[in-house]
Amino acid sequence: MDFRQNHASAGSPSSSTSSTSAPNSSRNGGITINNNNNRNQDDNPMHSWWESISRARNTIHALSNILSPSSSSSLNSLADSDRPAFSLLSSPDAYASIAAALSSPLSGTGDDSICQWLYDTYQSSDTELRLVVLSFIPLVAGIYLSRIHSFSSSSSIVPSLAGFEAVLLVLYSAETKSRAGKPILVTIPDLSQPSLYHAPRNNKSAASVQSRPSVGVLSAPLEPQIAVKSTKRACIVGVALDCYYKQISQMPSWSKLEFCQFASDWAGQDCPCKSEFDSVEDDEISDEMRNLQITVNGENSAAAKKETRIPLPWELLQPVLRILGHCLLAPLNGEQVKNGAAMAVRSLYARASHDLVPQAILATRSLIQLDKRGREVAKAAAIAANSTGSNANTPKSRKPEILLVSK
Image (tube, rainbow, N blue to C red; front, side, top):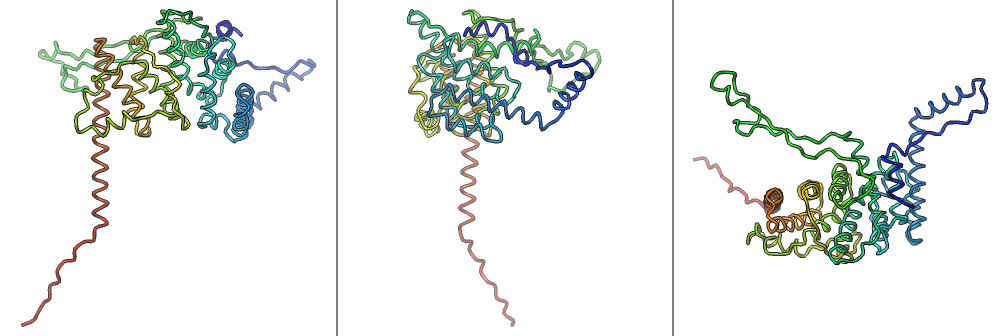
């Protein structure tokens, strides 16, 4: 199946949703009765809930037919749960099975069934099913960019990756439709004023120093695309990663770990610049990050990937740094996610320092400093907690008794 041709006809998630009307068996009021019944079913929360459950179960059963028979039993058990889509999103075994299919040497082609499943599932109206697809965007984008640039650098014939491109394009089209041709703007206050909320009085001396907030373009308007051209590749992948970032708080930790590993591989800069901000006191942290093995379901996912240094224009690097910022600083993330993000940010800082990209240097350096301060605060809090606990267990010395003797 031609994914790009499919994508051009689909356009966005909303375009794939259609309503099926009942057949017109008679014209003597039967149509009105049928419409009222359909309307009552749509307004019934129980009917909507059951329809969502049925849709998720059918989607998981379709997935079990694609994957290896060994994973079918576990997927069928997920389909029988009360929240099938959420169970699929939260299952490390299911993620490992789908990731293995996406990582195979022949994956990503135009007739790849797992890419077809991701493409169709994202166009579903079920929010949790779309979250499942988003959880694989780091893997899809990582394998796609690594293969494209590894084949380009070796001057070999680039294989067809239309399956990966279709998955990325369906996210890009949905975001293009939601933005409606408008850019994403950010208002920057006038930093020459004493504070962000300062408003000078309207007098002669202050007339010339009125606050003039400036407006910056965070993201330019998106143009519709029906294919991934080399000049638009970074923009399309960047928009797909931005869609992932918008839902990152609901993404499982193994998906975030995959992204951190790919970000380190994309930087491709292993030099002393990585540890420029790590002092002697940080040896424990540096050793922990150096020895970190990013694993998915107990297996080393980095072993199956070949490190590929790729171009990192700002339209791609910007969403990468947003995702890494969340992985690094969000309080609910585990230590493994934070350590993986710390490695990736330091690699990207070294890459930006060698490429002499000022905005990338500033962004990565700021994340490194925030990471260091956060670790210092956490270490101090742990020391204080340990000292408090040890003091609580230490028996207190009894005060000397004072005996009152009468004369």
